[in-house]
View (cartoon, helix red, strand yellow):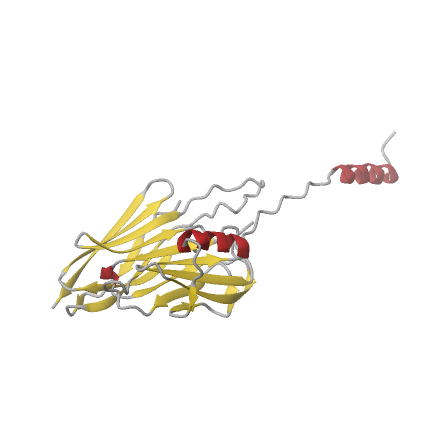
Length: 108
Length: 151
């Protein structure tokens, strides 16, 4: 399949205690397992089934994802930041692959 | 002797009779009962309260493949006033569960949104679970013009 590419939008700066909005998107076909190919055989399911966001090693947000989430799954959520640091985002594929992305934020 | 036109037509009609295809078994659809069952696993049998939880879904979705959907709960996200998770269910999809958002105190707010698939016009249900065990639900009907589950 096409290369899986995560894209994440995190503000570069924030003030301490601010609640910021984070937007993530990852290119993935999210094959639901419901579709059939031209010969009538079911196409096996292959989706991103788990997403987690951590800030300086602390869990911020996570999602358990089922096949009803659209292709190229988009997630928008919030985080409260009190210090500068690094966000780590992780997507887990049905086939065991793990995709990650990191973003720094400066908090004043 | 060559096959004339009339004989050829008779032959092809016979072949067509044998070409009857079996009906494909329709995939099982989730329904309101399946959603209730999945919700019971989260609520533990308690009836979820209305209100507090906001479900933002479009009234009409032209394309069932990407329906924007958002949830939020008015919560301080501190101490006992804390949302643990919000789960979204779809009553008319092959599988009732759509997504579960898990929050932590570092989430700051219990707000999240995504894009989901809807097979047909149906009710979308959101269920929020608080740290103190209370549950809240919200329901919204989305009309779908083109379904989004393949099959």
